[in-house]
Length: 191
Figure (tube, rainbow, N blue to C red):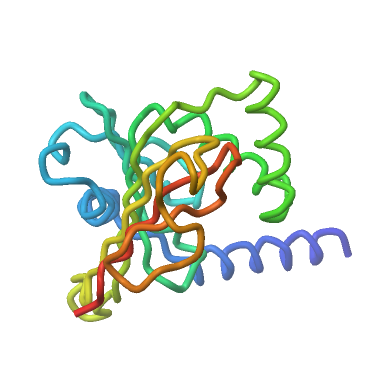
């Protein structure tokens, strides 16, 4: 009976892993780099996933940018890139998510840790998010779109002169004002 249960669990794991197909390292790197500003692509560090779905470093970097490959467990294609000064902050968010924390819990925990000095947050840093649609036949990314985030912890509408509510595409606004995660959002119009 134990053998049948173990075999069933093993087959289920194989099925789940094949259902969550991990793209090649090369594809992950090339698509992750689409989020990186052109000037920084050659030396950017790239995080992605191994064949078992573990989050790993796919390529070491030599400059100030880090790129994240698309998460194969998410059905929408999205990569991101950020300045290396944000890596500790981003890594903490991934760790808390892995622990099962939801968005509000992650926000609150990181807010407390930044205020206490336990978690370092740079005074300013950039994040770029690249989205699109994967062509299933070619693997090419269609309908590419990039939006920009400029972190400025504890910035407010008053300190920046920016509105604190969403604005039309192409206009800057300040999200999460007055918090550790205050950031300027720039969402260009979609073509």
